[in-house]
Image 1 (cartoon, rainbow, N blue to C red):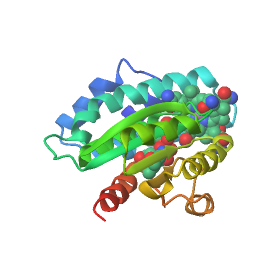
Image 2: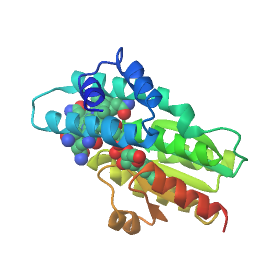
Image 3: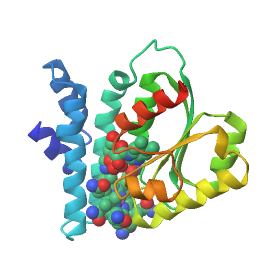
Image 4: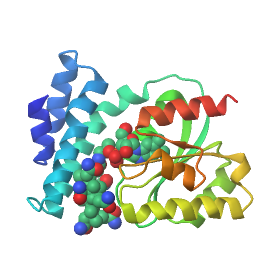
Length: 208
Ligand code: B12
């Protein structure tokens, strides 16, 4: 696990997939791989970036290595043969280019049986509104990794409200700088600390 963490932090996307497969073959749990190696590696990279020990290119290659590991885990997280549970629209906020957390949320929702419309990253409030009008989801998921793009969550919820769509969707928000108080303040229905919390909320919300 430590070796995998190091490989991700060092951006070795050539080595990470085989290491992940080897751990799974040894019987290591998918969630453990995620929580004990891949995510801590990104936290470590974030800290090194913050302290000026590494720069943007290193952070980017680490993200690529993380994604290479996630691609191996994806079929296990998504599972198979689950009956359709509902529809969700998920995106990263305008101005924000972080999509690893969002992609995990999508995998978890799909694993629970949701049909998910992935709006990608840097999603404008109007694009969320248009997607709700087109796809009529019950769940909307918003992700922000920058303090500066958290405010776009508020704007987006306001735009959904202005379009008269607020009543038909349950909105969940997440991302490292987001917390429960902020979610409440901007009128979201739920703050999810991780993708599993988001999945649990969404699954309960569609059954009401
Ligand atoms: C990888 C990374 C990048 C990559 C992103 C690649 C990609 N495709 O995503 C690149 C190199 C592009 C990048 C760029 C930048 N980054 Co950056 N990045 C990171 C890093 C190291 C990891 C993020 C990550 O993927 N974590 C792993 C995932 C799994 O965790 P997560 O996203 O938090 O998601 C989990 C939960 O939060 C939750 N979740 C997330 N979203 C949602 C949504 C819902 C609905 C729910 C329920 C749950 C949920 O579920 C996930 C787990 O299950 C973080 C450090 C960190 N520890 O977060 C910095 C970090 C976020 N970046 C930072 C910065 C400053 C930047 C730049 C501004 C740097 C620059 N000078 O240009 C740019 C901004 C670009 C932009 N406009 O967005 C800062 C942000 C500081 C702040 N608070 O504003 C951080 C914290 C680093 C630091 N400590 O300084 N970055």
